[in-house]
Amino acid sequence: MNYLLPIETINREIDFKLVLAAKLASQRKKLWIGQYDFLSLITERLFGGIYIGKNIFLKRSDLENGEHYKSLKARGFEVVYLHEEGAVFSGIESDWKNTLKSQYDLRFFNEKDKVCVWGEFQNEFDKNRSENVKIITTGHPRFDLYTKQYSWIYNPISLKLQEKYGDFILINGNYGVANHGIGLSHIFSKIGNYLVDDIQSRLKRIDFFSNSTNQMVAMIQLTHHLAVKFPEVNFVFRPHPSENHETYKIIFKGVNNIIVNHEGAVGPWILGAKAVIHDGCTTAIEAALSGVPVINYKPHYDPNLDIWLPNQMGVQLKNHTEVFDYLRDVLSGKEAGCKINNIEKVSSLFENFKSNAFENLIQVIKEVEKEKGQCKVKEMSNAQIKALYLKFELKRKLYALKNASSRNKLSYHNRKFYGFSKVDLEPKFKLIQEHINPEVRFKIHNPFLIEVQ
Image 1: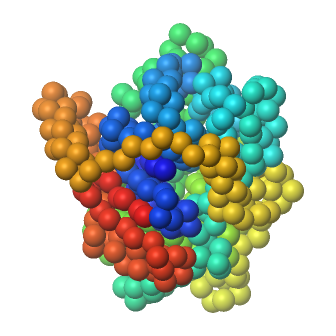
Image 2 (image 1 turned 180 degrees about the vertical axis):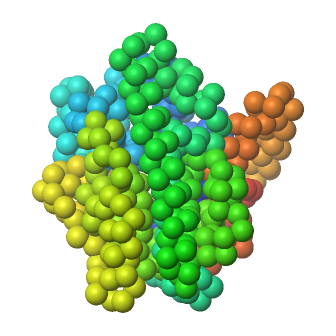
């Protein structure tokens, strides 16, 4: 049977999908981990299996026609749907529900599919808007990698980072509205969920843009002041995958103890850091699960624009003096670990604080396998994969030649998915074989596709 595991952002998704594939691997299964567009292309040559992920829908729910979902169904695939952003919402609870509505339309799914959700809040909301689809609370396996059980996957790189940078503070950007990788033309467009004729929606976007811009400037200002206040400490500023990274390279250029870096997964950076500073970023949740001190720096607070869940991690500080004092305590060893505020509500939003998401998701997949039973299966030859890769690369090159806008969009997506590399992945393959499944085998066919068996 074929198992499809799509990836949109390598740094965010590759590690947990490699671990998941290793846990699922057996002689009867062929697992394909790939860039979501390329995986869609090879699906045309496959038959029979399970799709595990979110990239069956590429547009906002009110614009989505379900073309890719219908194609998967025609090729004999069931869907285990799991969104990458299921509980990290801005605004108040009514806004959270609107965000969920815009992410996916449950009417596309049938009774054989399973929709996996991050927590009970999402579960209850989805059950109220669907009678036929099975909704299951699993949490998200990506965050399990930050628990002690999986520390082996990030520790080797984390130690190297500590050797290179010494004591460092990780500062995470999360300003895709103020500093989007494609530009403001995306943020203020229909495809970017900006509805200019809807006054309420338009003003909401303007308010969020204003707030995001203020927060971004405040974080930049704080970073410069920290670099002066603590000259012996390095400050690693890590932009969000959706941001324009060049903005920060320009702003921090020439400051020796500020490093702008988005290389690799964020996990080793979190584990190696003395503390994490953020506002509304999922890295705060990952740091909290890892026991790393977290600072939510928020000089401009508005509950209607706040990103609630990650901002419950650690301490909330609103000015430079408070941050200076807290970091002194962290660096001296007086402060350690990360407290979690409003833990009951946090746990209702995010199951990872209560149970093991890998085990939960695998149980769902096994349920689908059992229900599916024996089915017709069609696989691909190496020659077919090579031909599809050449076709895919040609299409990308032709797209880049269209105009400057196309090149800008392609560059943006290349930053999020820069291709699978043997140098980066082979050490991870060995660790996964050692800790998860010694029989599993990985094969990198090309920069967009990994086969696991």
